[in-house]
Amino acid sequence: MKACKSIGIFFAKKRNPPTIARQTMEVNYLCGMKTYRLNDWLPTTKKEVEARGWEQLDVILFSGDAYVDHPSFGAAVIGRVLEAEGLKVAIVPQPDWHGDYRDFKKLGAPRLFFGVSPGAMDSMINHYTANKRKRSDDAYTPDRRPGMRPDYPSIVYARILKELYPEVPVVLGGIEASLRRLTHYDYWQDKLRPGILVDSPADLLIYGMGEQPIRELVRRLQAGEPFHSLHDIRQTVYLCNDTPIAQADDIQLFSHEECLKDKLKQAKNFRHIEEESNKLHAARLLQRVGRQTLVVNPPFPPMTEAEIDASFDLPYTRLPHPKYKGKVIPAFEMIKFSVNVHRGCFGGCAFCTISAHQGKFIASRSQASILREVKAITEMPDFKGYLSDLGGPSANMYRMKGRDSRICAQCKKPSCVAPTVCKNLNADHTPLLELYAAVDRLPGIKKSFIGSGVRYDLLLHRYDDDRLNQSAHCYMEELIARHVSGRLKVAPEHTADSVLRLMRKPSFSLFGQFKQVFDRVNRQHGLNQQLIPYFISSHPGCKEEDMAELAAITKRLHFQLEQVQDFTPTPMTLATEIYYTGYHPYTLEKVYTARTQAQKLAQRQFFFWYKPECRQPILRELQRMGRKDLAQKLFFIN
Image (tube, rainbow, N blue to C red; front, side, top):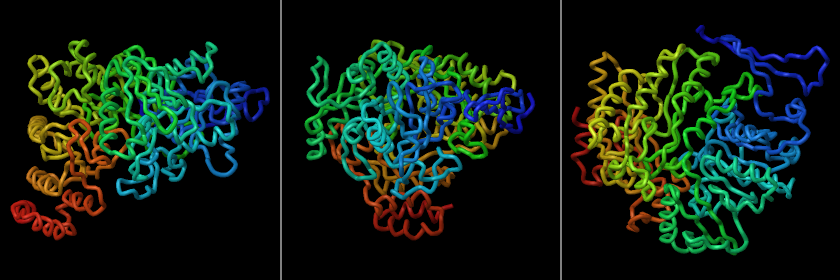
């Protein structure tokens, strides 16, 4: 296949003079001449709606991100799911929330409801650094332009829509609403906030990956059920003015007001929230907020292979909307030649929100569905034969699940690998190896790289079943020899075992073992690849001395660290609850956490011991600790 060089975009007019609204924009790929019309994207303007001959829309989605018609962008996924249900759907990306609200008015009122999503990231993480400094760019906006979404779009957009159309239901979705569904600590306001439905006038919240609940919602609305009667849909949250009829297994959480007065009660609440998020048969959660009650219905079961295939096989163009011609959307550029092979993660890392949003049970696509998507990528403009990532939330969990589903059905642990790999876990890497081989055989594919993080604890664990040990060994060899694009990223996160236990991460000794394998395979194949470890400072339980030890250990391994970050408290993670409450929700023991900027900077500086400007501050700190041995290791021994 010849390399694609460019995209030609033009207006094609019919012979009979059309209105401007009925002009068709076509996108011609100069390799393969694959042609798209403007209406191959979901409409974003009144003219695009009229071009389809539609008089009224069924659902209008408002998104804080630019519209990229790709399965990695939530608004596109939900829009395509609704379209597949036979609905007339439009997306309004990055509406202007100032002035006369014209972006909120331009498409009128939908027949069923408005959908609101802040985008693929929590808006506050998108806007602010760990030090609460305003970011100067936005990767989900054309040309990184900042200021194209407000703080908390889930609240701002919903308020505007309710002001303009008070009778039309509003449904919240996306990660911002999902992780703020109950009382949560907001790092940017530095206070405990109630579930987001208390601040947002939306009528319903869908948490997690939304295909299953949105599909049930629209089917029941189409069947004539009133919107405000639909309080039993799984994976939804609603706010009611009375106490709902009790169910046998309901869990009554401490009220928001009780949590405001007593941090220990907030910690106790979190354990219930996390456990119920990671159970196959979860209970309904109830929490009083003033005179109202937040009701969190249990999640849907993990998606079947057929269900997840159906979502990824929807007719995405896989491209930004043509309105962004000539502009670059960095978040799209990052993933446009990548493929997501599964959802979910059973790592349960204390600082990570994936399991809270996607769940710990793995939902894997079929090999056939993945190959269809890879084939579509080979036909994209500028594709030169190199897949940037064939991965997922964790690269090597594809098709992994419990051997005995009855044991999984009784389990409420948030992690299948911490503190050790579960004996019931079938961690067979063979399906992933078969997938890699099938992808690499496709015409047009020169290399498939793994850009997602790899769980080396799954690779180095000694299983009772030697077939699993063999498949893990083969996977390491295959990964390192053939699927690394110069650099392989892994996430040990820390070196101190006490901190790693709190993080739900394996001992750093496993990283050392993996590095030995990595170096050996590189030597055997004549490769010069880099292993890039990720680390976090200021995580709950971490002290300055732990960071000093980290600096000395990583220096001994010849690393000058680049991929580092300060711990940022984000809603609905174990680490955030420890940060806010001071207690570990599972043991109720007190845990030290660096909280002030001075404490955070004191920890972070140890990452950069090799910089001249950090030498004297670090030496002073080590002298204060009485750790001359570490000063010797860092600065006086080559």
